[in-house]
Amino acid sequence: MTLGAVEVLTLAQLSLGQDWRLALCHDRPAHLLLWITRGQGLLQLDGQRRGVGAHNAIFIPAKSLFALEIGRQGFGQAIVIPDGTPMRLPQMPRHLRIRDVQAQTELTSLIEAAQREQQARRPLSQDALEGHAALMSVWLRRQITMDEHIPEKRSAGARLSGRFCEMVADRYATGAPMAAYAQTLGVTPTHLTRAVKTATGKTAADILTERVVHAARDLLMTTSFSARNIAQHLGFGSAAYFTRFIQQHTGHPPSKLRPAKA
Image (cartoon, rainbow, N blue to C red; front, side, top):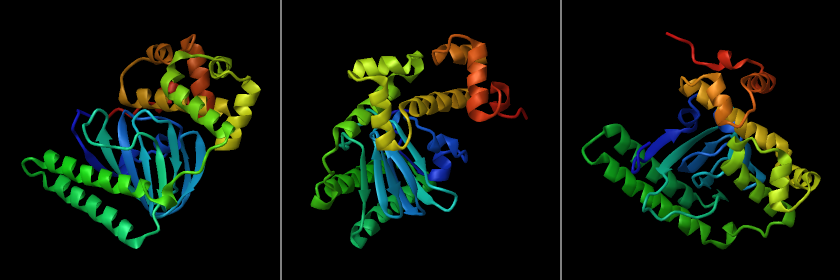
């Protein structure tokens, strides 16, 4: 995506119809504002697991690790805002449960207006989309200032989990072992695993593995790079180890995860 290209997508479009693209821990190069309007599920964001439901607004800054499981009956929309935009946006991940009907209607109306502009494809439509996105940012920042949306103070374990997830987003492709993450964070691997498990329901190793699997599957599906090159890019010692890793965590060898040729 080029700088300035704002998009409005459904969650199904964001995931390209493939559940793993949202359900596995990963980060994205663009900011996301998600507006869930139907269904229930689980969100992992900022090193914590939360329940999500209808009328939940979720802001995910670029390069922030997250995972979302919303189920087949769930529905929501995603506003994709490229990183580097001059638009004023929150600096931190936020998950807001919007109970005020007027606020719900306001955001829904802004998204619907942006969708109409995107579909019309008129001259200067991208300028208009940026304007709609800026209004959504104003809406979001207004909500954040309300007392009901001030986040609770996090425990030391939750803060550690958040720092670990930031590191995973930055270093998952280095091949560094879990002990290296723990050493950088100044804790033992056992303590790190316990803190992350309490905060997210997953072990630290699970989260790192999911991020690597997501990257591997994406590269296998969207590029023509060889399995050997992908293995090197993701820090694997050999193509054979990469193949065993993918087989173990997806049930298929890398070749079976490639898109079918026409």
